[in-house]
Length: 392
Ligand SMILES: *Cc1c(COP(=O)(O)O)cnc(C)c1O
Image 1 (cartoon, rainbow, N blue to C red):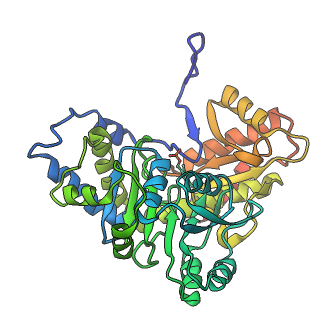
Image 2 (image 1 turned 180 degrees about the vertical axis):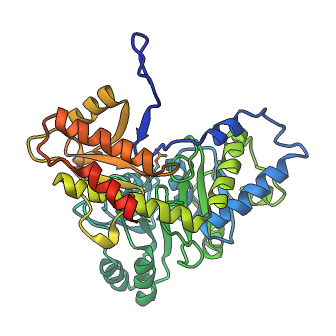
Image 3 (image 1 turned 30 degrees about the vertical axis):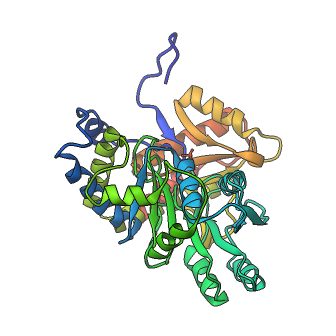
């Protein structure tokens, strides 16, 4: 982006952890003419997308697509399966977990809130302890953010599932996979997640504007008795329409064209390879961060994040001043520190449509910026990342 008085040549480097870069073929797919969403061509589009998208969530159950940001997906999940006054168990892993909690509060839910230090994922033992202590089964759902994008920490959902099973508690498992889907392994069915929430603008390589709910049979059953008042998000009418390839209201047709193409790209690459690519780029980024002598926000290696690396700047440095300088000098956007991490960290997105050279360019911009901004660091991060990529 440039203002009217200046032009920054070359491609802008969008290295924030979402919205992510949109492949050219996806942009072109979205430029097709709008068609009649009640017409005969529509079911092929809808049903093709639902099939291909199910193979990204690894879910065989219903999948709902909303014209909304991810926040709408959070709201939909809560409204469909819960009734105001009911209790949910939630964990303070960072900014997004805190925002989802705030949505739940506004919808009249009670929150059992487990505080955290924003550097670790959800502690499965705490899940088990809280659920065991809840003998009356007042807790109706566990809310878990898979990848906490504000800190670059990925919680271990299988361990949370195991903890829930060990406690014998019937609560639903609601997972935010907004920035982990198509970046890290995600198995909606095998992990017995009841509602997986996601959105278009992260690993799915689309512009913002779509959210998703992948739903288990247990959650569908619960939806029949939950009595929160809502209409737009209602799974029942969505399901009835989707089965025939239609939507209860005007779908975001051009975003669906883009989604269809993005899913084609993901499946052409192969989901295993998509995940492995993210994992490798993330590892190379961490190698650079270590070489710079800077600290990763994420403390547990088992919780390292495939889509985002959050980097702490030394005391006395301002991460946002660094980001501003990098934007001006290198035409690159990096993620800002959110909530209580504002000014203390910057985030490197390696999410979605990204490859070795894009990452090396991004790391080059960071290393140049660290030097120009006078942030204490060692040089050699880019070199170390190059070597890692060459050897792995
Ligand atoms: C991006 C994101 C969201 C969704 O935010 P919106 O701005 O509403 O699209 C939710 N959770 C996580 C973990 C995210 O990274």
